[in-house]
Amino acid sequence: MAQLKIVKYGDSVLRQKTKEISDITMEIKQLAYDMLDTMYNAPGVGLAAPQVGVSLQMCVIDVSPNGKKHPFILINPKIISGENKIELEEGCLSFPGIFELVKRYDKIIAEYLDLDGNINRVEVIGFLAKAFQHEIDHLNGKVFIDYLAAWKRKNIEKEIKKRKKGGDW
Ligand code: NI
Image 1 (tube, protein in one colour):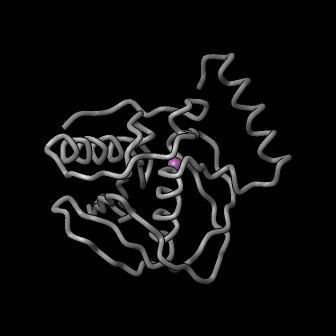
Image 2 (cartoon, rainbow, N blue to C red; image 1 turned 90 degrees about the vertical axis):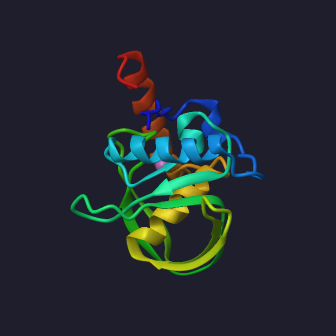
């Protein structure tokens, strides 16, 4: 397994719509394991392929506490339905140090392929449901600050510009 470089907000790959994965090759499997490795070594509970510069529909998630591992590897994932929106604080590995309240579904049904190419349909709730929505957004070129009020987003963009100048982004 290898550590991959995580791209930060401002990189155009984060705004691209990703390509569906038609064939789960050895390279795709390797990418999934490398993404998991990268996520476990970063302060995050999810990582989407565009965040490591790869514009494909795959993301990894693990929200289990206390170092217990229960990873999800989602290929071509889709949200089928959602209910009961709630607001929770959220961050993103492509936005280090930035945390904001985002309103998302508390319970969703999602469909995805696993690494063996099997279709999985799952109902997930709470923090895991939030992580699914955040990561699947990445595959559509969407990031969490898109949900914020325009003035808040502008402030964040300003802060990022400042941090870029200071070499801290
Ligand atoms: Ni993110």
